[in-house]
Picture 1 (cartoon, helix red, strand yellow):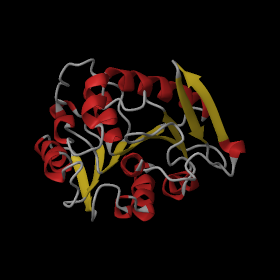
Picture 2 (tube, helix red, strand yellow; picture 1 turned 180 degrees about the vertical axis):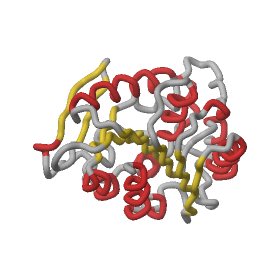
Picture 3 (tube, one colour; picture 1 turned 135 degrees about the horizontal axis):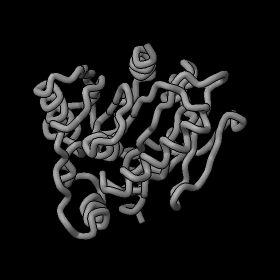
Picture 4 (cartoon, helix red, strand yellow; picture 1 turned 45 degrees about the vertical axis):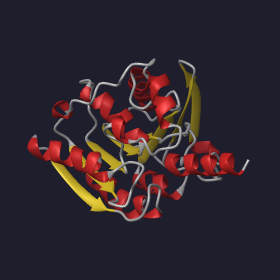
Length: 248
């Protein structure tokens, strides 16, 4: 029982969950639906939406993970509608997550009256989900923000239960590494800690930054500290400032 409790707590950290993640104190601003079997949600801002931000949750997450919490709500204050999906749970960047992204973008855009600007915000496993969508040549947002992002699923062996999840997500075949040279020419922001032993910075965040720099993409970074899920990975001010600049 103790081992199970520790594993469950670890998954919550990776997903970026909290005990209040599903609660919503301003439900009048929230719209929900089910698309292709996946729960989706968009939290609208007060007033007309200026942009649509898609939040890609981490391992163990759902459409409710971190939604309507302070970190993402700094975007809503600026006029962003913030949307998320179950993304087929622990998808680890597979085709189902890519398809879910397209469906979510179409639905959430309609709910928010089709704002012109779009931004992706990704945490942990959500990094590879969002990057898989972008490298597939789909319509790109104006900006991408990734905290402790998974870029190479072959490097996350220390993540609890990741091996069977990745095997199931890819029907027993080895995932094809992302072709980062196909990432679009948008603005990127990458946050990671050198002390992260679950999603090693050198093989994920640094690998991404190196590829973006080689492709002459606009990319900035911010260091975090501590292990995976450390609060330093979730800076309200940093996300707020990036979101504001993306609206310009």
